[in-house]
Length: 290
Ligand code: NAP
Image 1 (cartoon, rainbow, N blue to C red):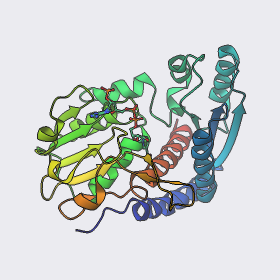
Image 2: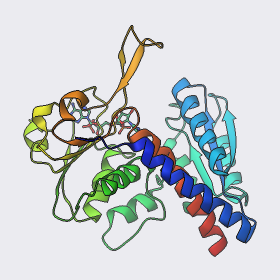
Image 3: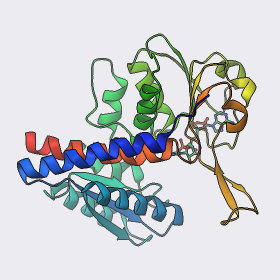
């Protein structure tokens, strides 16, 4: 079966975003702006933020990085968020998670103005996602990217049997809510679910977001299913330059012959950043429409 190429789909979308950014600038003089707040020196977070900044630059989104020492106190970080909330050149605020343990992450995320919540983590945005008949302003980037991939795969959501593996606030739970909004019949599998294989085997759509390398085996997957592998796990590989390689939650080699599947890397990852760009553009468009 062909694979579901997130990198190619993301590239096409980024070209459209770049064109829409320029159109907005030409029409209104407003250039979308994203502020990234990076607390501490976690190397993975630094890499993610750098990738997001580069992606912004490539589509013409103005990006500002606030690098804050790990020992920052709650009040200082809160006043930075308030300052960014009031800054008219900034349309989206991204707080790179996780924050150091001494900080109240929830309070910080709740403080981001809902119109600038391009990560979609504000409880109001999540609440609207969960409620029938309501639409959030922004949806979390990773599950929103999964939904675009499913659309590109031509999936018929209504009545489909969908299984999401994982229930985190940033991936599993919003992914399940998005599938439900599209009228799929949704089951969430988590760490306390007995015999997950028997549940996953029924699925027409699988979104795997457990963070467990190659946990989903070929005999868990129904022939012809569409499988979105969010998992990004490091496994030791002495032949690789960095001494490790990245693998998903699904045994890709064994599953690719029976299902349409996203690779890792090159699947969900590029889509996540693309959806952040799309949300930032949307935030700027809203700001001029208000
Ligand atoms: P997380 O917060 O650790 O959540 C993992 C979820 O998986 C939890 O709900 C957990 O269940 C469940 N789980 C763990 N082990 C399980 C098992 N053996 N069987 C069934 N469920 C299990 O992780 P996350 O932030 O959602 O991320 C998940 C994965 O996606 C990670 O590999 C992460 O690196 C990757 N990711 C990729 C992107 C991207 O852009 N490509 C973005 C975000 C995350 P409980 O709730 O019961 O503990």
